[in-house]
Image (cartoon, rainbow, N blue to C red; front, side):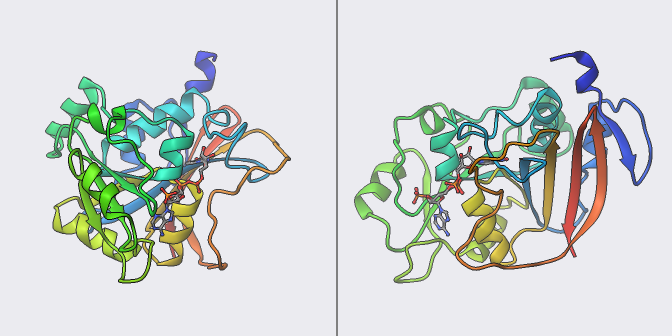
Length: 253
Ligand SMILES: NC(=O)c1ccc[n+]([C@@H]2O[C@H](COP(=O)([O-])OP(=O)(O)OC[C@H]3O[C@@H](n4cnc5c(N)ncnc54)[C@H](OP(=O)(O)O)[C@@H]3O)[C@@H](O)[C@H]2O)c1
């Protein structure tokens, strides 16, 4: 990866060359005073959300840099169980530099990892839980297995956030619970089912999307999927560029 490609310029609303980390964080500063939930994704030009089944093949060093900086601003990082399994997530631990930045900004040194799952096919001994710097939260539906809830309860706060008889979570309930825990800023890393479910429920405020300069074709999924379409307009609030790659920030209209 050449250094050239990790240079990030701001194109809109202001123009600024070669942003440092503080400049990138400023470009993504959350709106003050209100809880927020932001989805972060990478897509190819033709809308693929994965290459060889993972998002990592689409992103590059600049995408990774912005991804890590976005985690910094959040009280909680929300992820679907499918992404945790497919991407092989380990414990989420931000760097000492990021932890110091967070402390100065009035945040806890590490964000809370919040997972969403119906089936709770999650191993309590996996590093996601066993090595977590902060006890994770697992959101699940009322129909999930009590045995699995108990097993995960040893290593995480398991929260039923769905209606009786519904095996899925209600995104609005998840958000309310996060807020009652004081976790007001939520950086969500997908995947497509979680984006679709939270978007359809009106529970997504922002999309921070990396547009990778590649055409993939094939049968990769899109970044949001749900049983029913749920069209909703978005408003552009920021645009960065690293070489041929674009980083767009959209807010719900
Ligand atoms: N391009 C990108 O930026 C990006 C980002 C993230 C992921 N991805 C890719 O997306 C793929 C994974 O897609 P995915 O849709 O399976 O991932 P996902 O959205 O992370 O996970 C789906 C899982 O989340 C749980 N879930 C979804 N909706 C739920 C609801 N309403 N209530 C309770 N649980 C719910 C279920 O877990 P259980 O099965 O445990 O019940 C479901 O199987 C991977 O290939 C990954 O690499 C791409």
